[in-house]
Image (cartoon, rainbow, N blue to C red; front, top):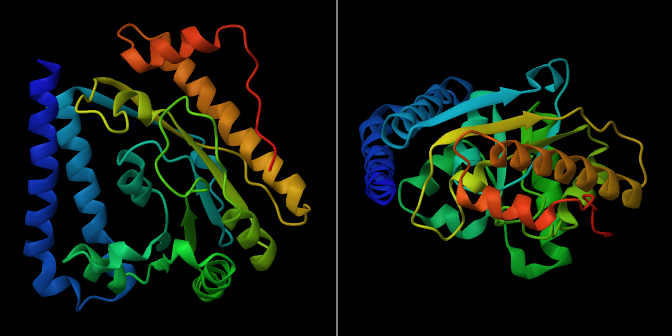
Length: 265
């Protein structure tokens, strides 16, 4: 039954996305950017409703009071599934996502991303990519955008050892920015490279911001420790729920009695 409902949701996910992109195209590109965000947010809400109806997912959003309201900031979010890529839209004013440049060439999606002035990154260019990313992000930051970056650069399986990239540390230092860490447990309900999507309560938690002024190494350690500690706690909550997903039980069993340790950058 879970496999059938998972296939049903994935099909509905892509059909709803394609339909809404086509449906809104005649008006979306003529709207001012800040007003145009209502359309992606409507899309995000529709996906949450579909996942609730078809999978039985519920959602909890914690730490909303930690989101700065009086200044711009960088969001550094744990990335375990597709869920957080659209859910975060509901809580951020005029966000600009840092994403791999290949996505800009995807029909419809790339056009929408260009309209909303995302920050594409050429990952294979090393230091040049960092410089280009910082330059584009700085411009967006000055326009009071919320810059969103996934510190590990890609989706990571829940429970996998963290692999934080230098990009977020570079932005924190170059932009002298406040950074808002975000933890999730989405990966145990929607596992990476899995056909199964499980019911249960998916949690997104906005953690206390990290203010400017830390040294690069101190910032990198603090960011990773905050996100990984909170993520481990959220996964443990999933494992202790009435109907825990298999991956949450596996992670809880493997880490029982072990402290959460952040890797050194």
